[in-house]
Length: 317
Image (cartoon, rainbow, N blue to C red; front, side, top):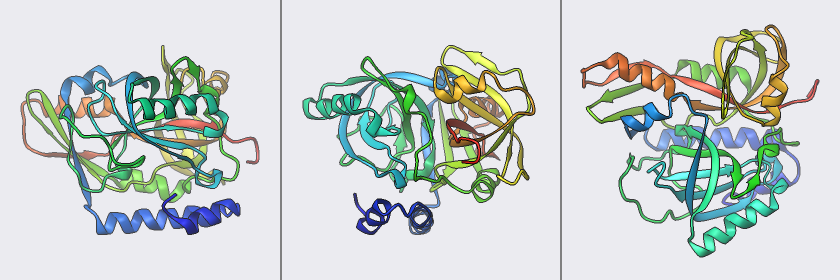
């Protein structure tokens, strides 16, 4: 753990204080580091994955960190590389203490240098970008630590080898994600820019965007898009007092996860208190690329994000 004070606060159960300090750290980092990051993707990768939620990948584990205390979110960061992605990666297992056998497989892979097969949600999100170039497909050296400069994550991991980790997608006692009002306002006000070439696309995003959020979700469309790796549906985001924050938001659920199983019985108008991870929508990026046509100049657009639901709080939670 790089921050002894935060570790002490986490062990004391001071989740609210930890959260405020982490947000302050992100804000300071964003001010002293670059204000944006440019990521180069192959257009074929975005098109092939525009409606996908998860990906199967052979992950070479460069560094596996410690399991975070619950006040930090209780996960583990695993830095590595995979030819299926071609970018610096950090994989994260939620509620890592619930998955000791999977964690051991990861640590064995770190020692042996043999790739381990994982299934995980693809997450393009610029929270941890600090200025290095991100160019898909270029050779890269071994990553130096478990949380290097990165924009792409396998997060959450839902399978390691033959070990199913879907049950780890649940809320973490003692951890509170970002405040709904301020966090969603940040996402809504953000923009990105894209530059489209024949086979590649450059995506310029703000650096240091906050990592997660909890809010009251209201289902607004009882007709989800269901596919083999999960479902998408339309929802309205409210704060815990019921005030509307975002009238229409795209929500993502991993097939067979506790949140996805719970959502199968929800109908239009139903509300639940959820923990969500934002990610840049590849479908949204693909639409922007199509709209650019043959124009190779930089084009600015509203930030196309969606929210992956990774936990549902009990009533009153």
